[in-house]
Amino acid sequence: MTNNQKLKKIFYDFDRADFTEFAAKYNWQKFRVNQLLEWQEKSVQSTAEMTNLSKEMRQILEQEMFWPALKIIKIEHSHLEPVNKYLFELQDGNRIETVSMHYDYGHSVCLTTQVGCKMGCDFCASAKLGFIRNLSAGEMLAQITMISREEKSRVSHAVLMGIGEPLDNYLETVKFLRNLRSEDGYSMSMRNITISTCGLVPQIRKLAEENLPITLAISLHAADQAVREKLMLIAKRYPVQEIIEAADYYFAKTGRRVTYEYTLFDKINDQREHAEQLVELLKGKPVHINLISANEVPGSIWTRSSTIAIQNFLKILQKNKLNATVRYSAGQDITAACGQLRRQTY
Ligand code: SF4
Image (tube, rainbow, N blue to C red; front, side, top):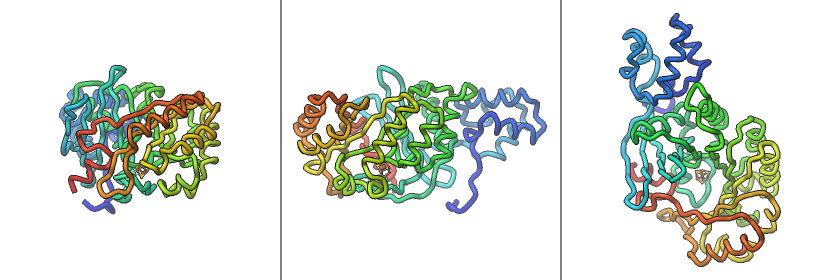
């Protein structure tokens, strides 16, 4: 199938309103809508499983939608920690990856929102693959239901931090979040959801108005505009100061403390002066800073900071009463950085 062909909807693209319209089209009784939503909640992956629907109804669902929503191509299991990476195939043959992580506090999935990415961060494996298309809301939800089903464990937390920039796929991302929260559907608490953005200012402000109290994580990576521009193409469009103002607005509207992600690269953004610039930018704000040890992309000029450099950076932030922690990427032994699993299979 080519990318120009019209894609069929998948079962997880439908919410109550969509199922109501669908049922009316085929003269199905209203209670069928609840049954369809219950099947969605049970993470159904084929029409054959929907045993309370007639054969004729199942045939209609089979014809009108694409099944299964996602096909599992490969699963890699970490030997170091309870982390699994999935490579899924979509109906048009494109492939995406999703990471499942089991923590003491619950089962978390890091999901993909686009096939590829157009933001062009220089250090990122996904950026090297270019942009192909946006995922639908259903393709996002299906990553969660498929993993719940496969691992026989209900996913309790979601992070939109896989391949793609979620706010560049704004409408489908917001529809997905609403479906994920809906009591009709998966009913995940908004407090358990984190969305990561490279700093799309207009969309951050728009998201603040959506009444979705999710955690916003901003990939800052540098407090200095010139350093940030070296790392991230998008930095040229939205200056650091505008991003901070949009983040402050998000906090004011939602009451959710913003997280800043700061990936450390050797001698690029990990020196004392860089930490002091970050202190200057965020001092006194109710924020959290995640310092991240970089995943090195083969062939890239960006290399990981030493453990000592990371610890020194952290000390400067903490000395200035900024709330900060260091995060090491999960699943280091199973093709670490975002986009790497997908890249290996091409
Ligand atoms: S880091 Fe995120 S926003 Fe930047 S290119 Fe990679 S996937 Fe896109």
